[in-house]
Length: 209
Image 1 (cartoon, rainbow, N blue to C red):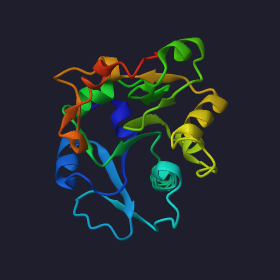
Image 2 (image 1 turned 45 degrees about the vertical axis):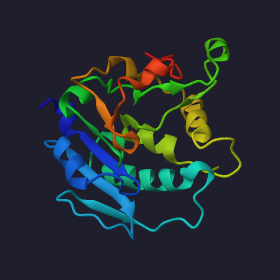
Image 3 (image 1 turned 90 degrees about the vertical axis):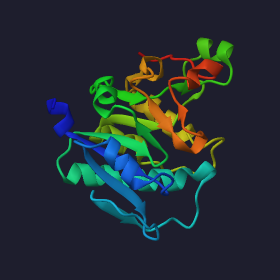
């Protein structure tokens, strides 16, 4: 294994929507922790962080996502990991090692940027937002991004995440265009959609390296 693998912690965050056994199996060989709510029922051989569920979910559940993610990031830092991959509970990689090899460990890695309006997006790179399928980066950088304070007075859930990335000036790598049939991410909540095909609808445009 590459040295980066040993320094990486996969944080699976959110309500359980896919069998933990499936996610655990597809991430075999990697350090992994589940960050779930204290009322979630989950069986796994990996560590579990149980969190008190916030009373308010925030816009588009961003309070839930940020609180659960931040607990996983703090756990990673306490355990000495240098990098964290934030991962959803409704997806799994077809080849975890090949997927991780796509990442640039000196950048914040995401699937893609959602733009809504391509003309405006090409003119203004601050437009749009980074989709939340996953995010990989240095643990300290990730903590800065996910220490979200405003989760209610925002137009959409990813708004504050995008602003924090821009404010801190982090370099971004989008990997959607690098995914293939042999190295893909399966989105179980959308009838096992392959994310390498998701770019075909042209709602994503890769404005980052």
